[in-house]
Image 1 (cartoon, rainbow, N blue to C red):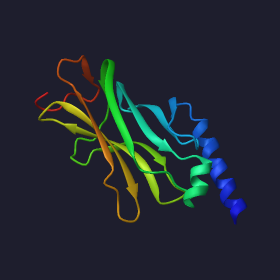
Image 2: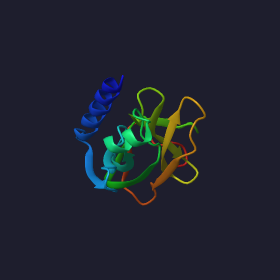
Image 3: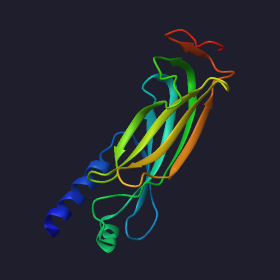
Length: 162
């Protein structure tokens, strides 16, 4: 059983190291725990890039804690416009839509980024949050990209009032 758990931890570690979206990894302690920073482009809004930071537990930390198959849900996000924006088909409802998902455990936990359009304030909101099957998760981070003053093109026509 221990060999299986060790193999799964090794596979998860190797998978996280080979992510082409990783722009930085900051070591935080002697056991090898890291904070990874990934660049996440919005698939429907060209010109917006989000940087998501999250905690990666080391092999030593996993062995010490006895919780081998999951990482904490903590995350941070910051998004910005890095050029003219071209907005495609985005959800206009209050629930928004998920644009990024990454497993944080073997089955029960994931890190997600959800985009919400705020028509009253002409802004795009990005919410990084954990999702857990049991008990949910209150760990979240928020970033807002105001559209006012930016060069914005809507491919499906601008919404009313824009």
